[in-house]
Length: 316
Image (cartoon, rainbow, N blue to C red; front, side, top):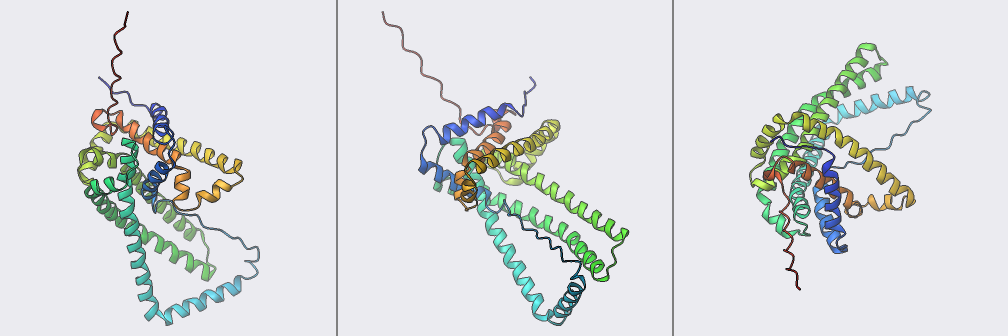
């Protein structure tokens, strides 16, 4: 019998799961506990955007800027003996911090999944119970992340060299600009690939690890077999994620507007923002779990619902 796979059916189930876990009954302590797990599950994933300032006087100060850039180049060359070790130290410190955040994020993935699947507000139990699975996920993502960095870094360095050279020489030309566009396109393609890889790992590989108690490589092998047999369904799932993301972004924006940006200020505070947006975050997690459950009971993380007690016999 062919399985019925839908990207819309899990929406109602996910909404109902959010109601059961967070609102039946409403418990503020439960919100904060599950919110902590959700915060760990997102730690280091949501980068903040930068501010772009455009100065209308850049044309008039172009010559001064060129001289400043030349002075900076001379300064770096003359002080390379201490700048290079400092750069290496900063790079190593950044990698170490990234590794710590990634390790905590992998722990949080299983903790939050545990809370959503079992309707529990636990921290200690899933922290210890899924430690081996979380460590396997960490090492897998750590290696994949390093591969992504080493693949992307040459493109970034080459783009920087080309841009810096053409800017200093005022030598903007079609060939150089086309080369920059090609390099930028390569970076975009790599970024999309690794973004999809991370998305599939979070949505499907982590639940398989949760169910099987296996390592990340074994779970990925199982998922790839299912992915190859249902390629069209998963492509539709990824496309529908874009639609869901747009709808959720509009709802969050509407919330910020009607609260006169007060909710926006709270959402910008680490952990507090996660607690505030917990229903949305839980919906996204529950949606992917209910979608996965459509592929059979072996992929259902939710415990079976207890049957209703039999009705008492009528009395006369």
